[in-house]
Length: 285
Image 1 (cartoon, rainbow, N blue to C red):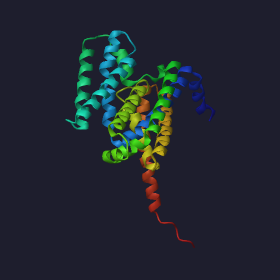
Image 2: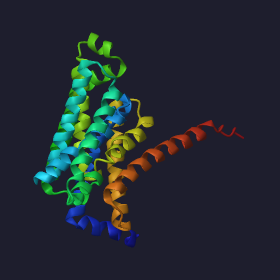
Image 3: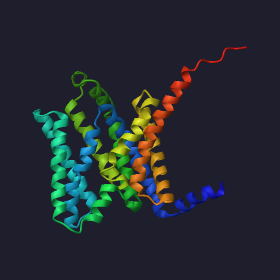
Image 4: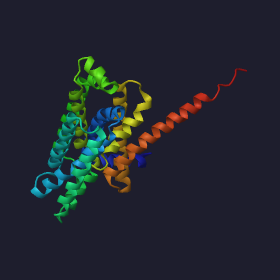
């Protein structure tokens, strides 16, 4: 038992590992809150598109000598604004507009990368994550992001619920469906940008969807799902970091795989409970 716990003490004794665990837990909390709405509204493609849409900003920022995450955030916000603008015009369907912008942003990023030969290191850190490089300043920023995401979700909860059922119903109840939709897209963008350091933009959907999908069968109430998703996301971060520490694997990919494994394990447990409930109880002697 002592030997099995020894590596945990060694890992937590390392400042970078402790910061990675704390920062990853904050990211998991943000993704638990936002990811619940992503699953309810079927917005997984949006999260994937925004993650890939960060690539042009990352490329430009790297070439300009500024932090890649700053450029990625600007690119993600720009893409969200373009999606909202296309929706207001009403000419294209939601998934079609996202698909076009996704391809356009990704192609632009690849074109910019093709002009630079010394780009690989900085780009791979944001594309695949570098959670072990989280600094104390990053932890404080993620704390603010978590508070902002939770506050926005709480304030807009009724509007989001009404929007999830029917836009006309939301309008009848006095809510503004377009504003609510824009706020939800903004929350998804915030979660994607916040998760870039932990799992990278290519794997961010795993942390957005995995814990939220795992939490879905265990609570009928949305706040309950959010809490369970956040806790399961934290567990996935801890498991991914543990695998990375022991096996020497990439931390971001290990966390993403753990998040997907949590979803699979949750539904396996649900299936097992369903089977047990169908077994008739033994009759009394």
